[in-house]
Image 1 (cartoon, rainbow, N blue to C red):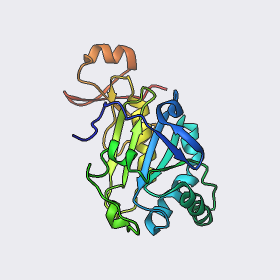
Image 2 (image 1 turned 90 degrees about the vertical axis):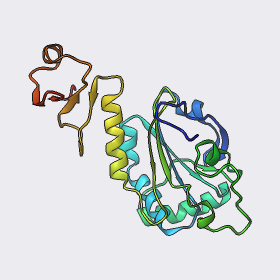
Image 3 (image 1 turned 60 degrees about the vertical axis):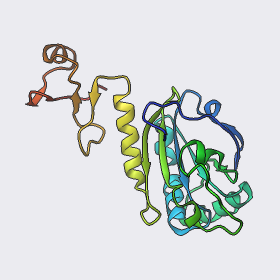
Length: 217
């Protein structure tokens, strides 16, 4: 069975472009995002890792660490980083994990348990390694996304989803479709209207079960 929301994210120790990573220790008290791809020196993933490099300040402002995963070696990652930085016009300072052993890919259910990646493998051999995991400071999986090889990931949406996770973490709220920070949030059904009004101010009640409140600061 694959990882589910609120499962503890599997811990692991792996080599990376920033040295040895002990994952839970590396997360510390931060949020973390794992984003993975099927092979270095591929066109779509170069644009994606470039987008992450350009958003480094946004992730840092949100107390979130980002880490890449690839089934290639640290030596290849370091060479590929030069291409990423040339394309993005920004330093790619986040670590990229060496997952040639498939340990991380299998632990996070990105590949079948019996996956076989031969020498000279192509991206098609590891095509399912196109996933995003948002993990909380408690080391629980908060959100997952998986994309096909032909569709570049929208990192503006990853950032928006991270904002929504952080805004609702431990609070009796949910976010509506297309929510962005600053917009109203939905009050949980478990909170009575009078209690919610007293705590959060006047509600915008669209339906008995759909009640909006100003997002707390």
